[in-house]
Length: 347
Image (tube, rainbow, N blue to C red):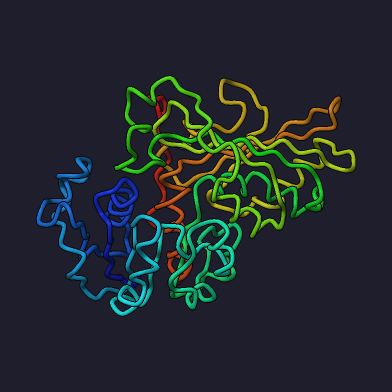
């Protein structure tokens, strides 16, 4: 039989915490032993996550951490860096889903965030997007799950850099549309249904923090804008690229296939028939799958790269489980085989 690992989720009442608990409860190699919540201590998991009412588990206080094999931290930015010593003391492997360990240096945190209180951990953390960092993940003790908007953008652009179609000197404009769940369970007024319904709202026209991850892993500076739109789950990136040399559709098919043909959670959707001709968040809702695609605009010497993910899955909890599977030597698709539903309502 495959080895079983004990797991805890710190910050279990949030949307990401709920997705982690859902995935871990159905995972063949994990046993959930603790889920923490300061505000819902002693309440059942089903109290916050009605889809998990059958899970026989109550939230406990984060002050009473139990020792486990793997600790998943689904906490707001700034919490894990303050508590990383305690987390590491209670778990062999720590998986952080905030932004606290995604970047390489303290200087980056000074520029993009509010500094870093535990910079000594940055060198040992491994980014959890396996399509980028698969070779670095085995045996990792500190895993940093990447940002959802960074993940969707990176996955859409990566084949263009892998193949040499882009060198990094070209102009790239990335426009990302995201669902309300990105704001978390406590997203505030802007994420409430009356305010969110029907909008296409630019909430980060410039300076979005996920730019730092894109620059770090693709080695490119790009123009990046994020819109809040009327959907619950999803991150959809449309990237406008102006290559220095002519590119054919054959070049693009070869580039994307070469980058992703062996990836279990990436599929290529580029102008086929039917209604869903290009990547759409609705088509991957609830799954750990990313859709990527492209289109050419020869008259303007422009290439448009598309990508779509479920921000709660491929952009967060699913990515974290995927990276952890690889780190522990588990079958990397374990616990992530949900294929999605069609038709569905707003993702």
